[in-house]
Length: 272
Image (cartoon, rainbow, N blue to C red; front, top):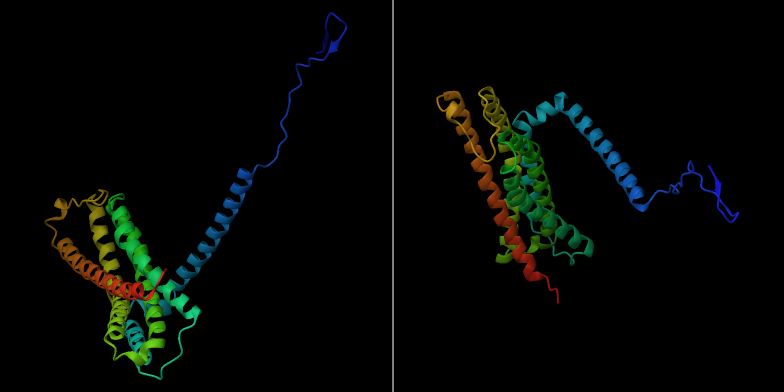
């Protein structure tokens, strides 16, 4: 309602009028929309890959390749043959191009970074933050991918290095690098093919026994008193610890081999 003042000046005062701010999308809202859409698209892509992988797991070819040892033997033989092919001396090649240097250094850096993150950051952080069975489920997903990725990266590093140095294997420094990288690759491949599958199988069996007695929700400790009298559990637990120790020792060995090549590269690079 509008009223007039004493000097006949009419000033409208409309009580039912509200001032509306212009609605415009801010940069923050726009950023959130882009972030939401990109996350949704990436999630959709990963779900498609996961569905295709699960479909592949149900096939007869997958069961033959990954649930029997014969394909693992074949992969190991092929890997050793590849190394032997590149180790065989050939004529001295030209200096590596910048692209080959970039690929070699990229594969090595990603390999070293993955080892450091998985061994000293991810594993320890999750072990002291998650219940044991949850931590086991995370490791069940990461272990195969970790050793598969590392074996591929170490093979790339080795093959590129041999491409330009297989005619210099008489040099003790070159021979040490080839031996270290070959040991690293073969160790990671053997762990992925021969040790990881039984480790995951024993982990699942052990966790199933623990769940039946209400054990496994503790963080960073093991309350195994309820299973101390179970011979079946002690057998599975002992086998699990034995394979896990072999994998841990193999992982340490591969890190030593990686550091050997890191020292070699650091002596070759001049940043000044």
